[in-house]
Length: 343
Image (cartoon, rainbow, N blue to C red):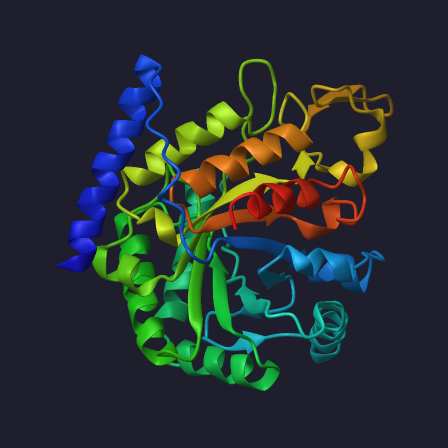
């Protein structure tokens, strides 16, 4: 009953946002902010292990939660697989930077890829879902997850499942999330990531989830700008209509950009910021393409909106695209200064 009430509240809140946005009326207030506003970042294991990605101690004065990515997967048999050397090296470096700060670490798990000869996106995702369904129904995945969380002293587990499309796939995913939550109990948190357009969580699954990372990026507007403030608000409005309570939601902020044609290039902010225009544009001569980045001002604007409207926090994809927060042009620093104005 509680989660149903929360979904109804979320629906009407989001509907109010849509109407107010259409009419140009602001409904934002300053008394909605949550007590524990999260600044969550993905840390890519490959960047730390192989690409010389730096981890800066001062950043964890701002970061409250880190999702360790690219260090573990699971297969169709429900077995969690990882390279122990990579896992331990990444964790040693991250925990060394964290020190005695109270920063929560969760392990991201990527599931098996599908086998499809089709070029159609829907067929490829359905094939991937078929493999995931086998793992979810294995009966052992839950215990295997807990075993690795215990071994490496994680605070929780996180899933980036892109994307269950069919009702069948969502049925298996929802049922697994509820089962896993029962196995995790109060000892570990359960987080998931997804896009606002593709959410079919049941009430029970929403109740099981502790955090939802809104992947509000990888789309452009008519000018070719990547994940603008205005388009992010539209993603938020869609999400609210899906019934997930906002206090569970961390709104994604990209520390990277895609070209105006959304071709397969992903450029980090830290490699482009010196050549960007004041309003966020960067031209790459090597490939003759234009990129638009979230600037310090846009990042602050998104963070401020999330605080004032009762969201659980913001999420960064990904950590290794930024400058150290001691740098005046750091995007993380912009988030930290915005949060500090409220807390």
